[in-house]
Every structure is written in C-alpha cells, then in structure tokens.
Image 1 (cartoon, rainbow, N blue to C red):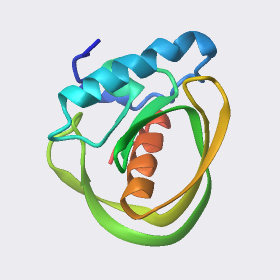
Image 2: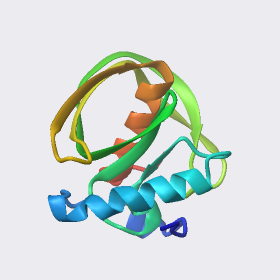
Image 3: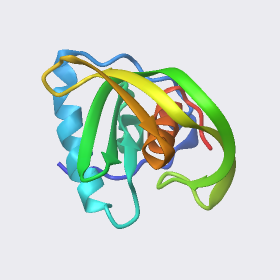
Length: 136
C-alpha cells in the first residue's frame, strides 16, 4: 500500500526498533511507496512512512532491494557530498564512504551480505542513518 511521506522530524530522529518476521508487510508498503515516488527517490526507510522499524528499501541497479535490520559492517574511503531527502526540504552536506559492506535479512528472512560502492553504497548509508535517527 502506498503510504504518505512522514515529515515529523521528532519521529524521524527516533532510533528504529528491530524488525521481526511479522514485519514483512512493511517491505511491501515500502516497495509500493518507493514505486510511487520513483521519479524523485531511490531509497526509503520505514520511518519515512510512519513506521519505527528497522526496514529500508534501496534502488540497486535495476532492482529495489528491501533490507530488514541492515547493519553497515565496513566503511572505506570517506568523501563529502550533498544529499536530499523526501522527508526534508533542500540538500545538506554529508560525509559518506565509497565502499561499504552491509548485512541484513531479505524478504524470506534469510541473512544476506552485500559489498557496495559509489551510489548504491551512498543510498544504503543514507537509509541506515534514518534507522539510527540521523537526519542529513
């Protein structure tokens, strides 16, 4: 189901609660909502649709990948960039890393690990920041 984008900064600054298998429907809502905003958005966290659970979605190449309880376990090569967010107005400066490793559970609740670089890595870092209550 397509959900409204949350702009409440006090809610967005809360640390997300770990997801469970009972939260798989959040991934479906994120898929629907991201698709509705595909011209202006390439990633989304559950708190952006009003759900304080550790679930994100990111456009990684041709696929929209849902990640439950994502954890960045490695960060290499810092750089400065500017990012925007559907939940906030304007762009803001931020430090990101060119290469990361992220672990998570997929839609079948199987543990996964990905090595990402450049824009895919940046998307994941932005969305994981959302889960930690960090706004750009």
